[in-house]
Length: 296
Ligand SMILES: NC(=O)c1ccc[n+]([C@@H]2O[C@H](COP(=O)([O-])OP(=O)(O)OC[C@H]3O[C@@H](n4cnc5c(N)ncnc54)[C@H](O)[C@@H]3O)[C@@H](O)[C@H]2O)c1
Picture 1 (tube, protein in one colour):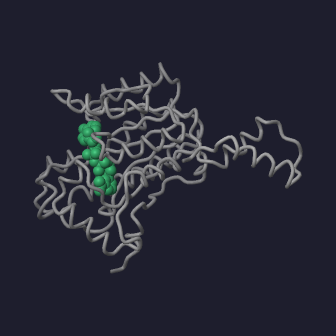
Picture 2 (spheres, protein in one colour; picture 1 turned 120 degrees about the vertical axis):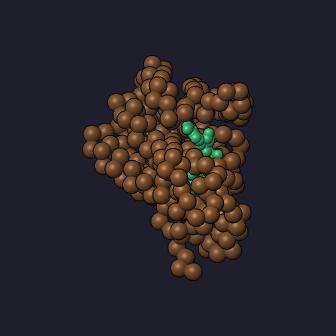
Picture 3 (spheres, protein in one colour; picture 1 turned 90 degrees about the vertical axis):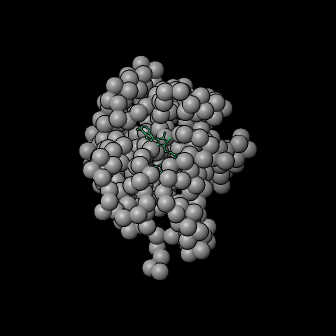
């Protein structure tokens, strides 16, 4: 959907050369112009974290990045029985990832190994997708004041802090104009029933996006942004008490009278990792069918 066929390329060449009567361009220059006008990730090497299954938002993102031409590295959460590994490997096979590695963001050695692999195999990194979060079920229902200290630390560590060590490891390998995209939710700024500690984690994540944007922008024009997605049924969201009510509420009240899909989030991630968004950094972009504009 992002790529032009040969006929469209020719039409654009005719437009510049015949209709606009611009100076003569070499074919390479035409292709460069067209590619700049399009969402084209050809040649970009992007690491996608957070795929658990075919409902994962990260899966929607990986598919759209691949359609736009990106070469992907995929991570999976290792577990004792290797269930995630085999499921994610099978799922992502059609996208031909050139890297497939374990990542538990609470394990610094795994982060180091991933970026050593990227250095050895890719030489650089053009995009990083941070699409992971965790909070215990007990923390995602009932009173926020009941949050335990351990539950708070774990949720904040996995869901918010993790973006910092990933960016630190990626920093020397980022190409000029590389992009980082993380996933957040409206619960960071509004009190959403049961979202509790995850709302606090998302507030910290959004602040981290701004600080990392300020840190990574000056030297290499690296941009860091967050997508605030509307509620979608996934493995992680099923742990939130009343997730179906959240979705129904959005379907009733959002300007588009529906919630969003993984593909729609994926399209925005592809945009944010492309040269088309070269002027955007430190932002939270809402992909929520317009829900966040509502006053009532
Ligand atoms: N589903 C929604 O309604 C929704 C809305 C807005 C934002 N988000 C955010 O989108 C992101 C992806 O979530 P999802 O809804 O696709 O669910 P998901 O369950 O498919 O993805 C969550 C991922 O986090 C990974 N993960 C958990 N702990 C980890 C750890 N210690 N190290 C590495 N990975 C770990 C899991 O393996 C999983 O792949 C999360 O940040 C989530 O908060 C989700």
